[in-house]
Structures are given as C-alpha cells and as structure tokens.
Amino acid sequence: MTGIAKFEKVSIEQFTEGWNNCFGSTDIDKIKKTYESIKLPKRATAGSAGYDFYSTLDFELKPNETIMIPTGIRTKIDNSWVLCLYPRSGLGFKFRLQLNNTVGIIDSDYYNSDNEGHIFIKITNDTNTGKTVSLKQGDAFAQGIFVQYGITVDDDATGVRNGGFGSTGK
Ligand SMILES: O=c1ccn([C@H]2C[C@H](O)[C@@H](COP(=O)(O)OP(=O)(O)OP(=O)(O)O)O2)c(=O)[nH]1
Image 1 (cartoon, rainbow, N blue to C red):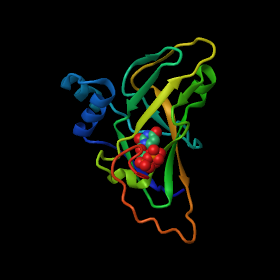
Image 2: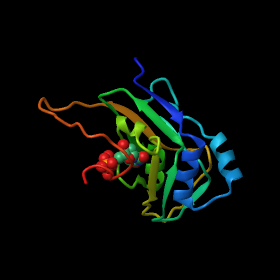
Image 3: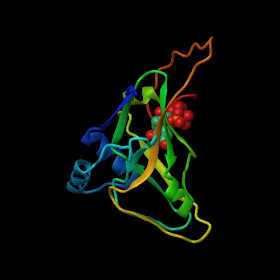
C-alpha cells in the first residue's frame, strides 16, 4: 500500500493556543509537559483501517457531558484524500461516546490553515445507562480513516481555506 499522508505535531505555540481555547489559560509548564508526551496517531494492527488518536489529558465525562480535545496533531494529505474521524467502537458500544459532529472531516487544505491544521475532536457521553467515561492521557479515544474522494466533471472550486470549522461558506 502506498502512503498518502503524514501525521505531525503542531507547534508548541499552536498547541498552547488550542489548549487555552479549550480549557482556559493554563500553566505553561503543564502545557509543555503535555506537548512533549503527545503521541502521533497509530494503527493498532497491520490490518486496521483506523489510526487511533490519543487523549492529551485525563478526563471524566458524566452522562451528557462534552469535551473538546486539542489533539496537538495535524496531517499532511495528498490531493483527493480526506481524513474521516470516528468514535472508537469499544467506547461507542460501552458508553455511546459520540463525536459531536457525528463524523469529523479533515480536509487536505486544512494543513495550511492559520491554525496549522490543528485537529480538534469534540465528544459527548451520550450514555443511556448512566455511565461515566474515564480516560487517561495517552488513551485512544477516536480513530481516523483516510478515504479517497472524487469531484464532479465540471467542478470549479478555487477558494482557499483559512481557519477551522465554519470558516468557508460564509
Ligand atoms: O472534528 C473535526 C472536524 C473538522 N476539523 C477541522 C478540519 C477541517 O478541515 C476544518 C473544517 O471542517 P468542516 O469542513 O467539516 O467544517 P465546516 O463547518 O463545514 O467548515 P468549513 O467552512 O471550514 O469547511 O475543521 C477538526 O479539527 N475536527
């Protein structure tokens, strides 16, 4: 199989900005330590489709609670491919852990956007059995699958992306 993408860490400056946007202003030493421990997404086995994304913090989600996680990761993707983010099946089965946007779409041109293409993952504990989700820093909590897509024969999109969610189509 030919590789069509590469994961990288965003810069410490971008990670700090993303972290502070999610959790409020935080001690820089804590952020530095967290940044150093970020793991690039990995597939668990040679036949897995999904690259596991790992939590950058310990957290607990009570029923109906939500968290936005700055992953510290960006990905460079070849043209005509997209990275789709999904929940991990185990966490979905046990807790109905959901992505708020149901599927996260990471466009290839997000890499060059003004936040360095920093991937954020927002999840909610949608349990219907009153369970609390507890995850540790470094635990896999979502998975990303690279998917090839096509365009229409008369496609004429020329716009350039800048910014994250909701930045286009205005
Ligand atoms: O779970 C997600 C989903 C998206 N993104 C980033 C990557 C993506 O390329 C960008 C825009 O996402 P999308 O196109 O799905 O959002 P939109 O609301 O349609 O906004 P836009 O107008 O920016 O396309 O936000 C994430 O970091 N996490």
